[in-house]
Length: 315
Image (cartoon, rainbow, N blue to C red; front, side):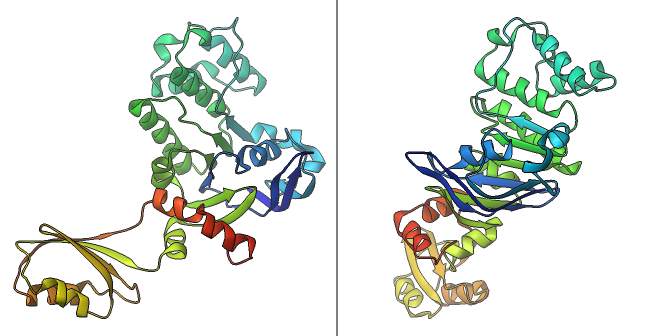
């Protein structure tokens, strides 16, 4: 659905995007991450035909944007961080205007359905200038979905939303995914990306550091496995017992809770359980803890990892 090869954008003062190669598959939710200044917005602008690449290749739906971008515009829906509205129009008029552009049949039903879903139907006859920021963001999402696009490009789609609004947008994204829509989403709310994305790309200083699913990202930065164990009590011998187990990298005991990091070479939970029980205590809870996307993201964008990427070890 989206393919770039060595995509580069250079401005007089800075090289904003540097040899970025992305591959977004049909029907997936693709998380596009990076700190401020990473080159995300510039990349999205090139995907939308708003900026022309300095060099490299870029195609959507297998069509190069150099050929005929307008032929594929009606298959794309876009939500930006700061959507623009026509001040003289009500929300209904705004949506009706866009529905006419895309020649949507039964536009009234489509508009009502989407407005109801995001809790805006009762505000349809109010101008967006009177909406809160979160309401404007939801209206922008409705406009992007009107024509049932095959590809959604979302740049901070939940910006300004309260938790209820975030859930509404998340449900819409999940519905679009189930219908087969490809979703390219850039967001600083990593918990939402973690919930919805099939694969994730991380940008930093204009370069693509990694492109993988979440488990692959976790494994790239840490091959160990973390296990949290709760016991009835901590025997005096337990620290020594844990230190003597070869596949335990380290451990931390806090009251009746034990945090254990394993080497990840195999599933050692049974052996860990046996060692703890043999020390003279009883396990009342055990769970495997995976690194969050936030922890993984911070590791990838750490200066040490960026140094590795410049040396060609992480691309």
